[in-house]
Length: 252
Image 1 (spheres, rainbow, N blue to C red):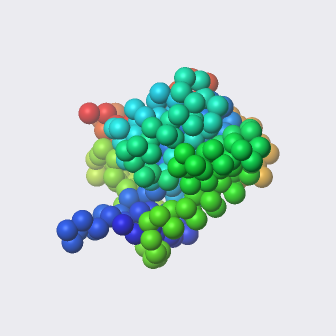
Image 2: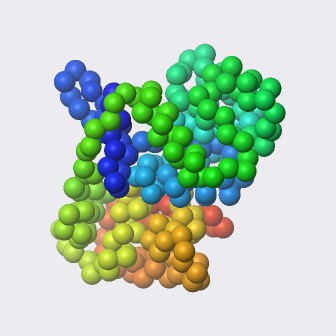
Image 3: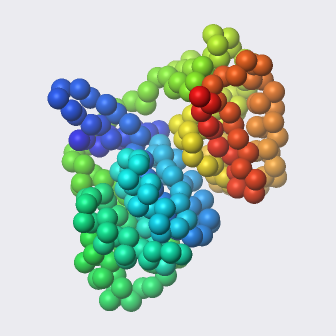
């Protein structure tokens, strides 16, 4: 397994019996505060990583059983199972890299987390940029050397094809009149399919962190974009998650 970097994408390359498959680094975030998810995930996306969010201890083990992740960000103080108990349980069956988050900064707490098998221990409050830097460092160490690999030319979701090079979108073979910003938004959703994206995350990615305008610009952009989808289902929908944000979901 090899870790690959690109200016817009961080991927893991799996080598299996001569076959090579490159996929985005996938991170599981477990914390009971949504602000933690929003701050970390915004920086993950700038590095081309995908993520999933859970808020309760029991959900961590369930997600790890049913889905592949390259790294786990785990809060110590969680409703249900404590992060230390989760870490101990994971280490009995998996070597997935774990970064523990905690408001407790005592040396004894840090030592306990590392002794239980955590790869790193970060105290709150923290810089999300530092967290992502530590993720990259851990993955380079655990997944081996790095190589430069360009991001995939096309992204396919249902009957939609996004051509990154031509910067155009085709649905059922037709080219809807999407604006450049709408195409950027579709790329963001397609690269994080089935993942919840908050308005703040979308705003930061498309408009930049120094944007001082109305956050409802995201809602207006999505509303305009939805109107341009053909009447025939494209095989997915951009679902509104009330009070949280938006998510692209496949329609079977």
